[in-house]
Image 1 (cartoon, rainbow, N blue to C red):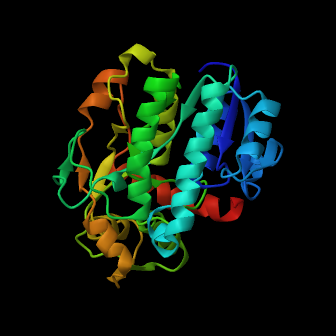
Image 2: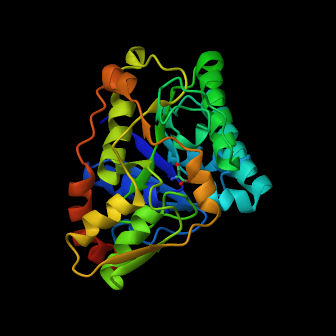
Length: 317
Ligand code: SER
């Protein structure tokens, strides 16, 4: 891990919280920013800036003041929430990215940018096991913005020399912060409800298979990609990364093996149609070959970790 100033935008969100905790544990200098303060108790003493990523002037001022060398742009409107307010979601996701890319283009201080893409760039014509170069015809505002963002990142890398690195994350499952506004959020909600009430009503169909990733693997993925030599990175857009895949019924059955009496039922809503257009899994040979991507946690281990730790997240946040 290179020493420098790691500036996280969207630091109060699910991934931002976990990334911040990880960077701090590695002894890195971390500056947090978001539109609301982080809730996690272990982040309270860190430098924090209130920042709307759509505000170019505020971005410039905050990154210059912090002398940011590594910028992680994690602020975004996710798939389910974005469908309810398309213009807002597009503006947040795109204006935010362009502001950071423009700043990084001009900056002598910013060395690297991390920006996550998503499984949402794929669409109904993508094969169930999505190849790295699988057809991208996204059907959500979120997916459209991530798809365009991938091309913008490639453009800024090619034409402005910005060292921006990116992966297509599947659903992220962790226990140190709660997600918000995503279609894959059920796979976190289910653990909260399993521990609290012993039952869960799922908004997806029981057989809706989706790719997922345990949060510690996602955070290691960011560290490893940022540390990889630039000349090893052959993919011009965003790398597929896969951790595991399962259906709600399979996850529910694994939880029921460990939580006596756990029951599940189904009330699919609009999020089912979003999930139906996403692949079941991602083929990630390029990430493995180019920078050594290798996730550690599968579904059974994930279930054990989440059932233990869920008690922690509820008291910490
Ligand atoms: N977790 C995201 C969502 O559900 C997908 O990248 O919107």
